[in-house]
Image 1: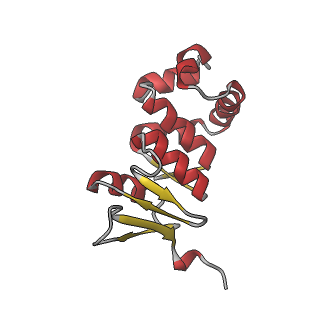
Image 2 (image 1 turned 30 degrees about the horizontal axis):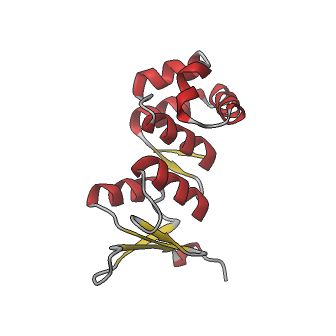
Length: 145
């Protein structure tokens, strides 16, 4: 699986959430078709940086769109952006955000998606007696002592 920088993966997720995915997204990127992405609500400079990254890493971007990707690294704010973009989660309804943790109410498919994108950096701990059924915390194996 291709590893992408956080901003690149989040823009792919924003495009997919906005209905621009698969071969259409590849064509939009190839042609730098900003108009096809205007409705998504991201800044033009973000898309221009994304197009530049795609020019320099075309094979990886196409593979990420076609077969999936994982993040090289994702911060808690990146995780927040990902769940809000991908799942339209709302704070205090679907999740609670702490300084270095997040309590989430996830379905099995949502959990599997998150684990596939950020496999080793974050750990998702099942919560049995809580409204939020998972707690996302930094994995202990990732912490430097």
